[in-house]
Length: 198
Length: 258
Image (cartoon, rainbow over all chains, first blue to last red):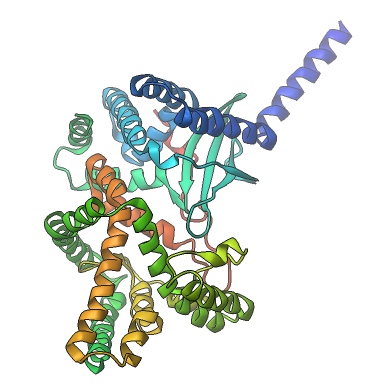
């Protein structure tokens, strides 16, 4: 009985410290390596049809990006006042618009490859930055930072920072400024975003 | 050529005269600046839609990627003396020497800069400009504003751009040229400048199309991205702000009170 207790206690202790511990840098980097090689470099150079490519890209997008988390961040303080229905609708349209935007811009990565430059800690315990760069034909390489969140062992991308420009931060500026000016608030935003999908 | 330098001087003064009061008022009330910015942004969007973008598309239609790359290299090389001067002003003599070497090699063996021979020899491009020099000298960036035609800028970026025009090759070629009369020198200067502008716009066709098609407020999107990108430039010799320092907190603990 005593033994069982100590095992239980030890496992409890382990869980507690595990929750406190920072994200494993090697694991985070490995995760981004998979995303960039399988998801981007191989997909873009493969000879599959456009439909197949889009399907694979969408799957990758849904699997590896935590869009629930990002969507919440980009609404900023308006997330708090949004109704559950508005939240759900916003996340849905935001997800679809991101997939559309990025599948259109996918070709920018053609012939490019990512070089890994290690990781950087973040203020949030469950998040870490993976630093990469993309050599360009002309001039200095472009810096691409991935913000990775550890959801209890599952890695998810929560932001991509290209040349110091955070996609989440930029979207947040766009949407909060829109809601501020829009007479229809969040509903107006959702409607306009839906119109962008067509 | 005299007229050109006068024109540029006037442009510099005019922009400074416009900017300084705006800068001073920044903290008092930025809604005036914001409404000016949005108006100028819309004006630029119209000019772009009807004139600049069609010209850029026309340029793309009559050239191949090979030619366009030669053109981009040509313009990058014209700006190399700007890097030579500014690396020196920032105290980086070795980098200044490299830029000078690149300029000499590429202007001759690289056929007027159209081929980047120096990169092949391991002397990689390492650009800098007066804006970065001012940053190194601890000059703050100032508020975001939209320039007519040129688009997003700040007081420091505008000052840098105007100063760079005087240290670039185009200006001095015109200045020392022994060919032609004033009108011809004028045409030469503005012709070169205009083609450079078209070449820059051509590169951004897809990116800007995508941005305007998918943003509900392109002005806010561009403003936010521009300001974040500017933070990359270190001030007073310090490294630029990281994404996290750029006032961006990714913790939602305070938002989870459902």
